[in-house]
Amino acid sequence: MHYLSTRRQAPMLALGPALIAGLAPDGGLYVPERLPRLDLHDFADCDSLPEVAARLLHPFFLDDPLAADLQAICDEALNFPTPMQSLNHNSWLLELFHGPTAAFKDIGARFLAACLQRLRPDSDRPLTIVVATSGDTGAAVAAAFHRRPGFRVVILYPDGRVSPRQAHQLGCFGDNVRALRVAGTFDDCQALVKRALNDEALKRDVPLTSANSISLGRLLPQMSYYALAALQHWREHRRTLDVVIPTGNLGNALGCIFARRIGMPIGSVSLASNANPVLPLFFHGEDFVPRASIATLANAMDVGNPSNFERLRWLYADEDALRAAFRSESIDDAAIRTTLLQVLEQTGQVVCPHTATGMHLLQTLRSEGSREHTAVVATAHPAKFDSVIEPLIGREIPVPDTLGQLLQRPANAEPIPADYQMLEDRLRM
Ligand SMILES: *Cc1c(COP(=O)(O)O)cnc(C)c1O
Image (cartoon, rainbow, N blue to C red; front, side, top):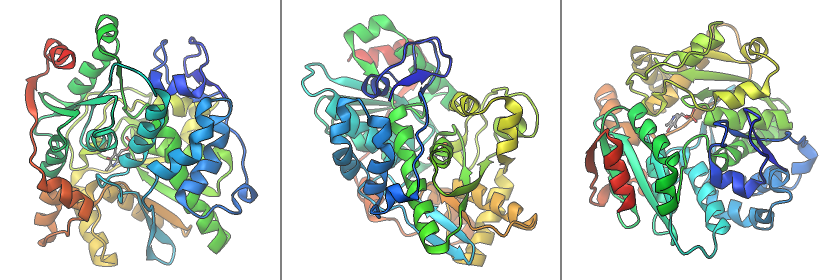
């Protein structure tokens, strides 16, 4: 399998080089030259996430030296459950937050780390992973690369715009991980990282790569939990599973959409956005026009320029075909709060603010008459957002063990202005 750029002006690459490159030289995103077709029989003896992932990803690793390690990579990276929690007779939560940092980003970050480790066996200079985060990516990447020989991580996050527990997580690793809190927005952080990644002089001295949500090494494994959920659902119910996905940069959603194209028994896919309206406006008929992001309770979805849109666009013949394929709605903070309380009352589940956008869209679909079997993706553990949720529900949320361990470590992040020279100095240190 080879990977081509969505802009088609860059040479095709094998998997390994595409994983390291991140962005293609023409500014596009790497996509597989074709999507394979698999069917249910191919998964007859696959019951666990690592087994399903290795089978599903086998065609994507063909012809690459990493193929020999695929099962080992899946066993190492995907070593926590992604269970379906029943809400009622036709609705489930697909819980993706049982990894080390309690958000779905752990899956992609751990898979990418396991791949990169094997791609640079005897390199003498460390590879620096520089990543801008609106909250959860940075911690997942830090956890995945923490104390891995041959790697350094530099995280940039918008000071004051992540939850207190997210901030603690970002600053608590130490060793080969450095957290910078930037006086600016997530878009400022992303612009600084982009500039560093395009700075050829810097990169000659300091080997750099990113681990942001356009990274192929994060996208590929994100197909696997959808495949597992849909396969298990099919085995039990002989029905396809509809999916509602809280969406920011479209990375998680693309995993689902790729899995469906490959032949997994997934029905409709609906995209829940927060008050950042770029995707909902597009799906409701307007042009795709990036704008500045606004801060919401679902902060990991505060995205004004959904970077994976190019990949989604590449999958469809034209914009109208793409618009027809998905339901997309914007859910504002007031609706997030109401939904959180309603879900708690009706199901006994406390969900995070991101998951609440998905639950709200599910309610809309139900009120319009859908009776389909539907899973809402639970993207983070609610305990990460205690400062939002606890005042609302009036009680404490129990903290999962892994998150609790991180919160007990001391945390330290260095403040910097949103200034490129400051970042370059830190990267050269
Ligand atoms: C990153 C994140 C999202 C958005 O995922 P995308 O892949 O950017 O669409 C949603 N919820 C949580 C908790 C996240 O961390």
